[in-house]
Image (cartoon, helix red, strand yellow):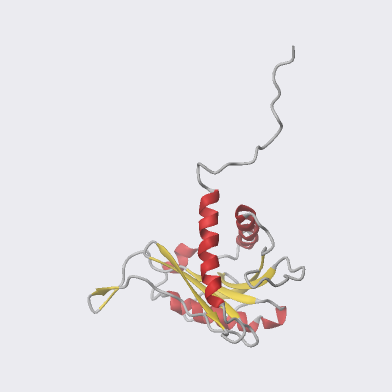
Length: 199
């Protein structure tokens, strides 16, 4: 849209999100968990940030209700856990799912919620680098660390020379979502209209 190009009737973008699962049929990673690809339709044509969030959230809730999902707390509690340990197999799972026909892959890995140190210096931020898959122009990695959330965008510069716009749009969308939860935001009336007493 920032290029003033037609969306051509495109309402959603298919994303594959590798997720930790409990599944006896899958090979475990070196840390003992299995990872499977979860397909999510990103509602890019939806103007309401709240509706967008609910639609994506519903997809993940459906995955969780299968009983196969592994919680972030459990992942972060695995001995030797590091976010990079899971971004790498997540990328491999996405590559194995190419036949399912998705537009991009998104890895989302919880990180430690306490500061880490190297040579006495505190690590302030951490950014995942999600490798591009064959014939894909975009990949996104998301990770949390010490109370913050960080994302990394990997893109094919030839296909997406304006990829920095995507980073700005992500921040804008987060602000829009935050604003939707504001107490001062004007909300549409809900339910039936109240009528005054009849005389």
